[in-house]
Image 1 (cartoon, rainbow over the protein chains, first blue to last red):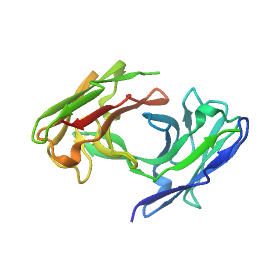
Image 2 (image 1 turned 180 degrees about the horizontal axis):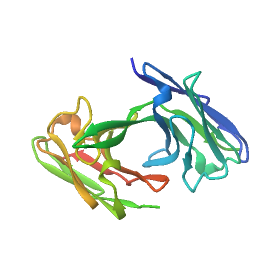
Image 3 (image 1 turned 90 degrees about the vertical axis):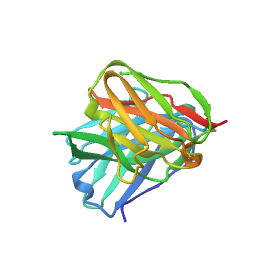
Length: 125
Length: 108
């Protein structure tokens, strides 16, 4: 079945680095753009980053720009988020999500239709 | 960055009632990139509506979305017990994406 599984979360000190992964299965990974979204405990959803299906372009939230890097390996059907210079405010559950496109009303409509279960990152000394 | 403001922040209703949630954007949003999600405690979000008005696969027809420009709405025609959750709108455009702060739909 269609599935996304995140891994790599953990506890890291402020200023440290971490890489989280998102393994995709059950669909043609190389044809979908992918997002990272995070959620601090008890808070709302915050978009983090997007990578196009072929990695031709990438976008980042201002809060992570210059510190986080999104990448993908289509041969391994895996999405990555490399996080550097981590801060306490980066503490959150990190989700990967598939960016789907459907034809509707003579146009295309978009949404994040498949989500992983999330991986928790805690930035603390 | 486009800011999405959802209202109300919290709503207490009973099963069987009709509810309309609002999502207002600080700038014009392309309808094709406006989506709605439902999230229950301890779970990942679930896509409800694509492109402002298209229901995602498996979403009951009591859920409907509408709107354009800067004003979008999600309507649940008749609340079921499983509909009590937090709802988020989300937009994508201009090399960025944002979520609204969420509406918490609680059982009265």
